[in-house]
Length: 202
Ligand SMILES: Cc1cc2nc3c(=O)[nH]c(=O)nc-3n(C[C@H](O)[C@H](O)[C@H](O)COP(=O)(O)O)c2cc1C
Image (cartoon, rainbow, N blue to C red; front, top):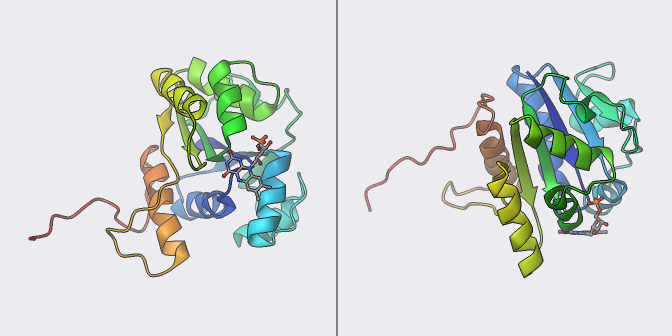
C-alpha cells in the first residue's frame, strides 16, 4: 500500500510521529509520501525538540526509529507541484493530514490551495480516495466548523485529535496511539492493539 501523510502546524506533532511509526510497523505499507508545512517543523521543534529539516531523510528516519537507509518514507518538498501526490494518475490508497491546522483545513475546504499539501488533498478527493483529516484547535469557531462540514460533505473523514480515555491509557504514547490506530482503521491497515470497544457489564 502507498499513502500520503501531510503534517501541518497544528499542535500535536506526536500524532504525526506515531502515525508514521505505526504505518511503518504495520508491514502493510510500502511507501509513505511525506509532506510537511514550514509550521509543522516549527511545532515539532517546540513540542518534541525534533531537529528536522525538509528533505533530511537521515534525521527523519532517526526520529521515527527506522534504519538510516530506510526508503519507506519519501519526503517531498512543499513547493514541488510535480511530486507524485500532486497527480491523480499516480495510484495510491489515500491521504492523512495529521495534525491538520485550521489554515490547511480552510485551504483544502476552499479548493484554493497553494502548496503540495493542499493539492494532494484536492487530488485525493477528486479521485474519490480516502482523505483522513485530523484537525486540532480549541475552541473551534464557526469558520472552522463550516470548513469541516464542507470537507465531510466532499467525502473526507474528519477524525479530530480528541483523545479517548475508556481504554485507560497509562502513558501519553498509549493515549496518542489509540487515536493513531483509529486513523489506520480508516485504511484497513492492521495494528497491534485492538481499539474496538468491548462491552463491559456495568
Ligand atoms: C506551537 C504552535 C502551536 C500551534 N497550534 C495550532 C493548533 O493547534 N491549531 C491550529 O490551527 N494552528 C496552530 N498553530 C498555528 C499554525 O501553525 C499557523 O496557523 C500556520 O500558519 C499553519 O500553517 P500550515 O497549515 O501551513 O501548517 C500553532 C503554532 C505554533 C507555533
